[in-house]
Length: 246
Image (tube, rainbow, N blue to C red; front, top):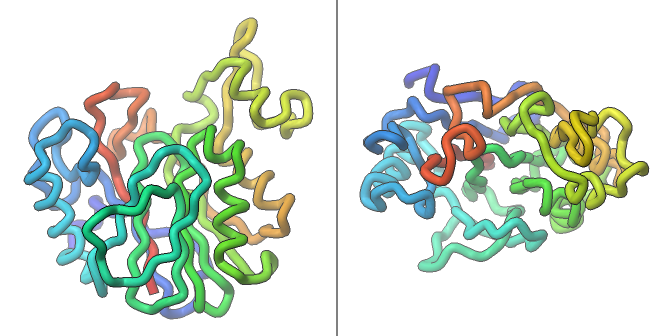
């Protein structure tokens, strides 16, 4: 396996839980500017290339089933999924499963992917947390759908745009409560603009519902050229996947 093509979460997940994050240097066939392991069908890339990349992903990682892809819309809907594929990707921004063999997948290119598992490995979850979904409660909805006590859940924060690279306007800070947001989550840069730390905001939201075993973070997709970044590359940016399975 090409070790530079993957990021493997460093967290104390129970035995039987597996997780991985792809990078653009995986065993794919996408041409520039998507070169080469783009997994996003709605990114403007050739659809057959993306399907080929998805097939290679399943084979190289020896996944127990095809990943359950979502039609992500920056909302808070959570899909309850099993391993069997459906003809249509469910419109949702998170998914959970209690069925072994299910592979959950989140596509991102600056937004925050968050992976979840219960301490005994009987439930998994995955969420797509851009600022809109994060502010609206997608992480809280995912934890609720896992039907597991919050103190028995651990989370891993995957690669997203870093706080030093992500400048936003007042509307984003206001969505998180303005002055009630964690003081270190928004740093003023110029009038009406702030550096926003998605990972810090996620940790705060999770802590408020009792999920305190939170790992990961420390990435910056904008500066890490292994990863796709919409803010760096624009509308023709690919997507990488964060996956978790039992």
